[in-house]
Length: 304
Image 1 (cartoon, rainbow, N blue to C red):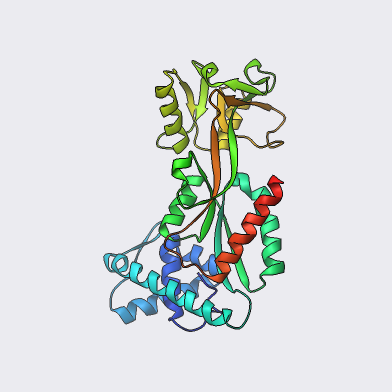
Image 2 (cartoon, helix red, strand yellow):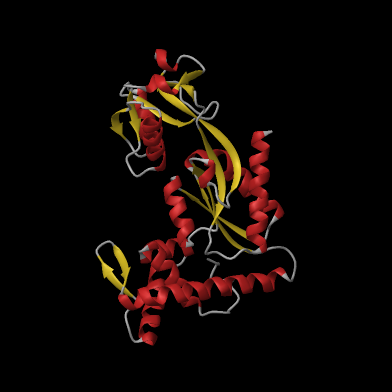
């Protein structure tokens, strides 16, 4: 979504507000994202509703939700906003460097490697581009990509068949993670069969990693014992550090704290793929293409 103050007036800026409020579900959140007073957001939405002759939003105790009329209107307005954004960028691009906002989602594990160098590279090489970074779990980022709320995102895919049109940035092995000093994670690797009957700390269904573990258990006739379900890696690590079981996660060198140790799972080797996925609903602009190029460059600098 473009900055309302710098957007070429191809579409009424109040419709940009409408799309922002619909995406955030809150007038205050939309105001914060746009760096505008909430009263201005409310006033503009009220003006739109008056012109339309119908309510676009219904106020609730937790924010706002679309009315039936708002739900019917949003998809068409969102397409118009995207087209107007792309046209405005094309007009400005004709003057020189790429311009416009690019929304990029990052996994928590990717923030340390990508956020600062990507921001620095965009600021230096693409001064006309506004980089908007969002942190979230892989499933959350995938949903935002499907909905068109992100241009691109660094996410995890569990196997090669699920990569699709995404660009592979890295292959990362799965490790068994446990409390430091535990015999099961004292060596560099551990066979998959050694996990039989071991108390595991894993995400709940329908998490993709959980589905993959279920398939592995069935394929290898392996009895997996789920001791605790925890839906974030941080929670899994805390439970493992307390001796409550073993987590299964992608571990990068030097990323575990002193309480934990890990062994790579082998026989078979289990890998996940860190990929750069793009939204099928967002336009491909010069700005997004250039940011994608910089993401690949940052990824290559960490591999080499």
